[in-house]
Image 1 (cartoon, rainbow, N blue to C red):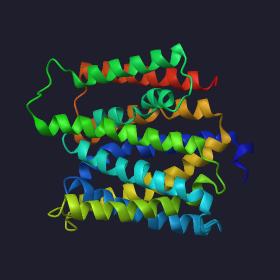
Image 2 (cartoon, one colour):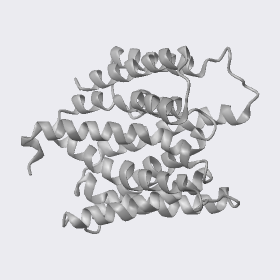
Image 3 (tube, rainbow, N blue to C red):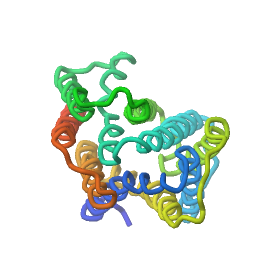
Length: 297
């Protein structure tokens, strides 16, 4: 079926992606009750790699990456997957999952200073969008009432902003890379890279880490994150990117942090506060401005 000729299917897939990625944040919180952060990330990556290999093989497209595509395999595997999975888990450990999703989703805001660093032009609209996002992050953190003495919470916010930063670096590389294979075809190998790196990090930085197989929450989290929110949602996202205009898909993805907040309220009883509501609105507005500005490039 040619998805480019079935826009209704593309919109349906976009909705699926938003739901799967949005629900991932409270599911991470649930999973952390049965495992330590990096061990949970490594187990998630393992299931994602297996699922991705099966999925791509079922499409008859499983092939060894070309030499030209190995740089993107390694950068996405190390940054967008390894670092993002680990940093997100470390952040959600001490920051409410709804707020975590918004902070980690600052990826497009990080693209503004990164673009300047690599010599790309940034218009005044892009700068305004970035400033709106920074203001939103400041409101979310609520510095006047923030407990700066709580090291875990301070580090948690830092991990989540770092997650958005490393994802932005991977996107910048992916945008400048000359693809020989499609993003879907290299996904299993990127997941495999992440699996190896995350288990190595788990052994080094969490030598006393654990996964409790006796807790049903662990299996709920791993099956959801490893099978659905990982390769399946990524496959749907690739399909959407090919069927819808880039700006349309990017703006549609802004539903992810909003759904993450709603799901966190329902699943883990996260309270909706004024700083969360106002900060989220500013961050999303800033991201939207950046996306719309980049669509004119």
